Image 1 (cartoon, rainbow, N blue to C red):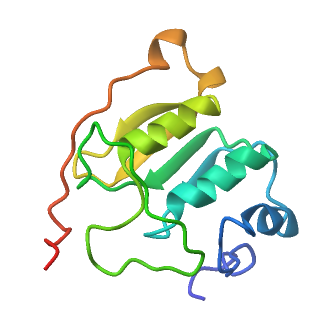
Image 2: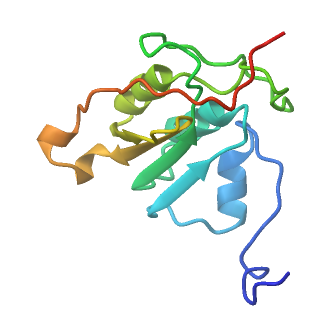
Length: 149
């Protein structure tokens, strides 16, 4: 509203794993684009998985919200529920390892996790040098997740 031109390009939609590809097509998202950020606070893993499985859209870089409260060696994700929202507990999105394993199977490589935790970046592997395609995962902690009661 206060940013001229932004209202012309911003779209408001409720995104699910079932409709994400259809929404990208509806709104003319290019098949090959620079950056995809997924941060719904719950179904991020499943939405990215739906895009990867479809294969039409291949962003160069993907940023996702991950759960730093899950130990680095555990591959876990929330159960998919299309209309679920984060309830404020540590039960949210998926672990860094779960994202990394999925990303690798679709030729994306882990690139970086923010020091404060919860945001990870993946790069399409064909854009990286061979030596940058298997970087080690780093343990991060975010103190903003309150302990479950």
